[in-house]
Length: 312
Image (tube, rainbow, N blue to C red):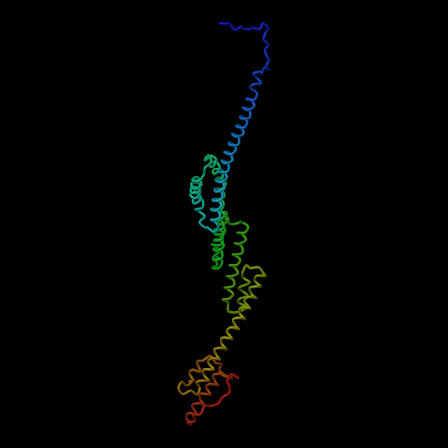
């Protein structure tokens, strides 16, 4: 068989050069991508952390707000409540109940909320205690003024002095106010006692003598005498009005009966009446009318007499 000829070139074969890539440049992109991913991861982690923290704070603030609102409502509910001795006891029971209610729905950090409530309770307990004491002081002071008025009215000097001193020592009555009230009450009792003595006197001279013997000031004595004179003048006027009304009533009755055969007026009734002895509408006048009636009966004169008004 014919052989196939082979040709082998004797010239050297030249190679085409390629750019060399350093290992560092080959990993640069990877490092950049890795750095970006790392930063993104850090940012995500930081955001998640901030979100968790924000939620924790939000939950805590919501719980704090619920706590303060509950306490505020409790304090407002004490307005007008006079059971001051139980304020603190009732608050302790209330705050435990409030804590339990808030805790059921609280999703935040319980230690944070506990720390908050402990700090709040310091101020709140003080406020509750202060409110109870203020209310008790108002109540006791109010009772003092009521007792003082009653003691003054009945003239009880010992009680006025003792109750005032007790109130001042107890701290529920201002010392200056208390001493002034006691002085005024004792003075009022002195005046009332003097007034009672004066009104029991039988004459202006006797009343004046009683007033002069008191320890009242000159102006108070003068006022007492003037009040006595006014009272006496008023009483005299009242007595006069009553007496005139009684006399008019008697005269009207006597006029209607003097010729009434079914209920005739008698001499004894006239004598026992409050009429004046003589004058118009007096006892003498009605005795005379009775006598005329008797004479008319004797003469069988039945026609009633026509008389003028005896009061004119």
